[in-house]
Image 1 (cartoon, helix red, strand yellow):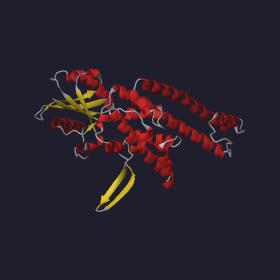
Image 2: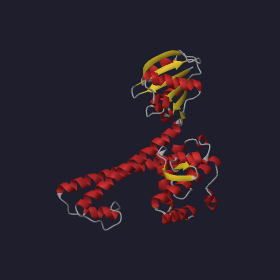
Image 3: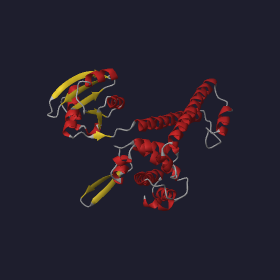
Image 4: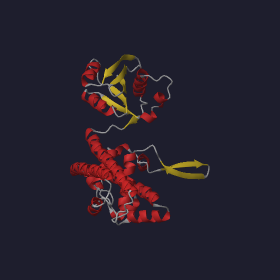
Length: 336
């Protein structure tokens, strides 16, 4: 038996068909364990269920797993039969999902384990807080510039910088806004530290994170993010495919004997791209082959190109290490 689920935030439409492609049941279901249990109870196992990989799909997949149903996530961008169909209804979308699954033509997306999803939430949650902190720091900097205040230290958010800010003579309303923004930054700092501690706990029980932390420029934060986003390395059959998934492979246009390389791919895992590019910037402040490579590229072009190129090399190294299970070996780093 095969089923397709068109999932929405509060309800889903389900179509069940047999091996011959005949629809044997269809219904609109509330997204609850009770509703799913009652609907799927009469059907003979084994049964496979196809769900489009949207935000709501993951907890739906978890419920289906608890019911003993094999769940397949469908890749949204590859479901062109749904996207380009003139008949766009919940029933039609669920029917197409079930039919593609029955024919073995469902474009599948990766379904992480519960442990991987938990690590992803912590890693992505931390990065979201870092972005918010950056926004508030930029607001503080802009406010001080509008008041004509030039900070005598390089980083105004260090201890000396905060002391300088505290001593500024500003209008009462401006001081109120400034203090509010600084308070938010302090709160975000505290919450980020909590998530850093949580990532360290994950690292203590995951040897993959521990091995990646030995690479220059990749600390616990980036190592945990990389492992969380990769999940199972065996789902990438080649190094080329992995680099493309990370968004570090330039777009290539070839016509006859002419080959042109463009910007980096946009259809990628942006979390992995961020991790490798930021790790490349960190790597530039260390010593070794990757730092020298970054420096050479920066002199040849600029820092953004150097970061992308070094991040691409780091992604190749990570792929090789996770596939082979070997430790980082500085003397072989150029091979990546």
